[in-house]
Length: 151
Length: 161
Picture 1 (cartoon, chains in turn yellow, orange):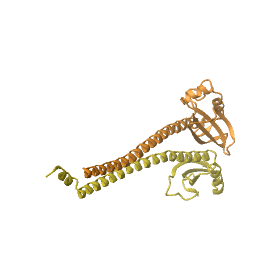
Picture 2: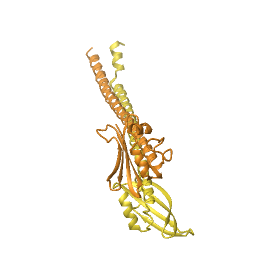
Picture 3: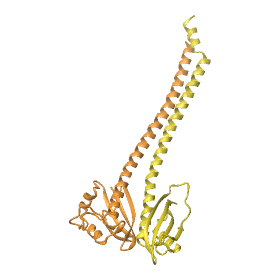
Picture 4: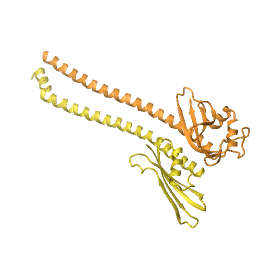
């Protein structure tokens, strides 16, 4: 068998096409894997960015509730008045839901006020509670639960 | 001889296509890697700045400072609160009289400038301290809600450079 004939057989067109197909499939798989890795990194970076703003949302809620409690804004036990105080303090891009529960000196429930929109399920919601005493006219032991989120 | 040349050309074209795809992928990965690296470094710097600003603002609005009766000449730790998130007027006055280089040293702001402003709840400035922000390359502002003179107020603490 001559050298040319041997080479012809080695470089058989049918065989060559098959090899090319395997090579192309391999490279496509590699490209998909590479893009999955890039996508995962992008996802990680964007998720990390959210964690910092979540802390700020919670902090804003905690500050506002502390400020309202210290300025006796809950003492009236009047929903409209408390809502006005909340609206005055709350930044425009925030929402706040409040549940104020108070008990009298004998620990019998005396007040239960709920204010604000319902809590969303598709975004971050910061939450907490604060305890304080209100004298209106007698002593009330109060707990305010709050939920805060960005609009 | 003629056939051999043709096959060699097919191989070369195949090689160049593969090289082209590989180069595009490599460039994409390098550019993405560089972008994410820059983004993550910027984010890490910003987080550090925000944390620093938060720690300082927290110590201002929640701590009494040390000693308890500190003045502009005797302070060791600056804190403006008479109680949690309630600012004391006398401590605020003392704070405003401390030379800027001493507070920078106390807050350990290093090569950053800072700006503190106390506002009423409607946003009207009551007092300020520090270097106001001009052409900042990096800045982080923390707003805290406080009580000052029995009224609702806010403080904003900005670290910038």
